[in-house]
Length: 294
Image 1 (cartoon, rainbow, N blue to C red):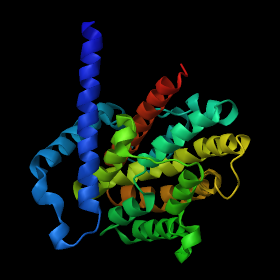
Image 2 (image 1 turned 90 degrees about the vertical axis):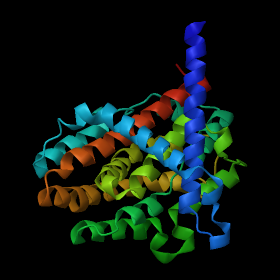
Image 3 (image 1 turned 135 degrees about the vertical axis):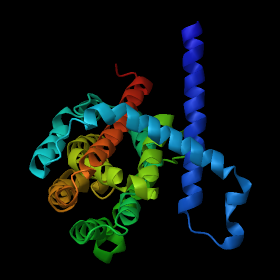
Image 4 (image 1 turned 45 degrees about the horizontal axis):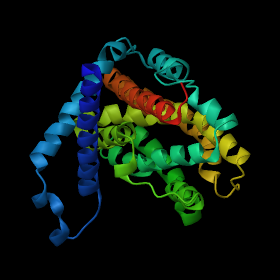
């Protein structure tokens, strides 16, 4: 009984923290007029302290493994690319189940959770590129331009996910989202918003490009199996293919030059990648628990 009560207390604490941090990120990232600035209505120092404590604890959890990453660029790249096979959360059995067995209600719940926890890759990339060295900055710009559909509204990646959500009749809301999904989004926003964590953000964004294609392909297969139309599932179909190219370019043009210029950046990039993977793995475990998939 005591273990159950302790578990419930931890769950409430984590949920309260990440709902508050989701609010912090809406506050600092959403454009507004001066008279609409909501910072006076919240305890901003408390929120920032909560964010700092969360990110510090997550960094500490992955630091021992990140410290083993090489600092020589080619060796680091081999280590980094190996995360696609051996990193936390990889090959999770959730995704073959989504592809081949999940009923429509389960798939809709999964998409709703993913959409509610979506931090916006294009916006994160725009934040991270500020004052980066020229060669990485140019690749970040190319990646951003792809995310923005090369200037065409119909090609923008973010609205593609929103289109799927609308087609499925979903209404993602933070208060209906498991805290692990909120924590993933809060991690990505927290890394991107703080310049002393910019190289962590490079690792976190890079490992998304590295690991997303396989998962996206299985989600796309599940949506197709459930009769979702090609135009509606295009977000996952696209990322199953495009992110393979994005990952190769990110690794060669962002990660390698940054480490060549200063090898001390390697552990930070490694930490960021592992932080993102740990958050993803926690999501997958929670999703499986909710869906009854042991």
